[in-house]
Image (cartoon, rainbow, N blue to C red; front, side, top):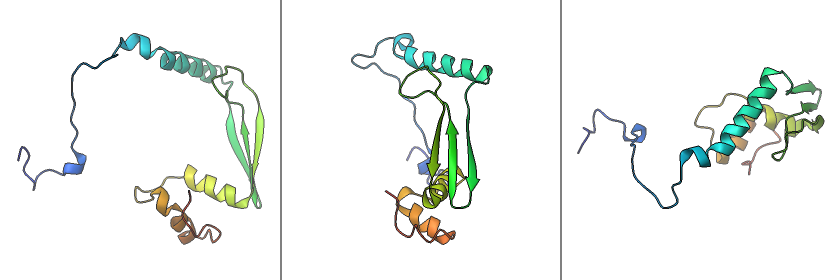
Length: 123
């Protein structure tokens, strides 16, 4: 063994490789769309133009969002109203969860936390 079993957790071990691949291309070219999106988003953020927030009410939640959609650079306001179950799922997913909350177990976790309507797994 390269690493002694009693000293290393093999699930936390990472390796880095160098090599050449077909159609590798130049990083400056293939990363350009990501750089453009990042610059566009930073411009919105610095101008404080983009918003996303929610309002909670009894049995519902309203999402307010004007982020660009589908690669468009246009800011367009929209409201999305969630019913009670959708709101609970949104808040559950938006909150901090332990790594033990796997998608297959999310319904059970919701149920255990008092969300009786979500007894089965979420798909």
